[in-house]
Image 1: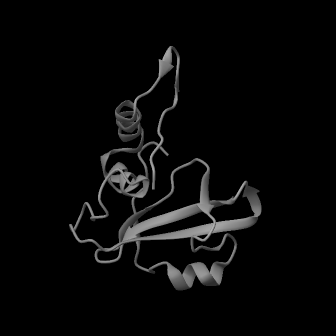
Image 2 (image 1 turned 30 degrees about the vertical axis):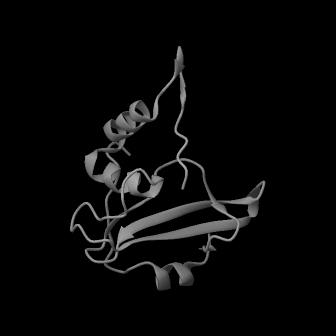
Length: 125
């Protein structure tokens, strides 16, 4: 996943490092460590148990398309220790060809999301 994280700033633009530092302060360290895995900035290694068993489950609504992409939300977790996150506020997309389950499909969500998942909440949300 290519990372383009340049956000507006009052007199210019934030660098990727500035953006990530602001996100860390906003979300809190524990949540941020998983979030940067999703962004592709950090390797897919669990911050808690150090295994490479990271999973992502995308929930998408095909009726909400933007170009060739579909609106989505997601979960990211470690299959070994079952710690993870639900996407922070924002707009996310599934690219054409990426797997997902339907946004409102409760049965598919229950089938694909671990029952013992321990979600880490972003600080201040």
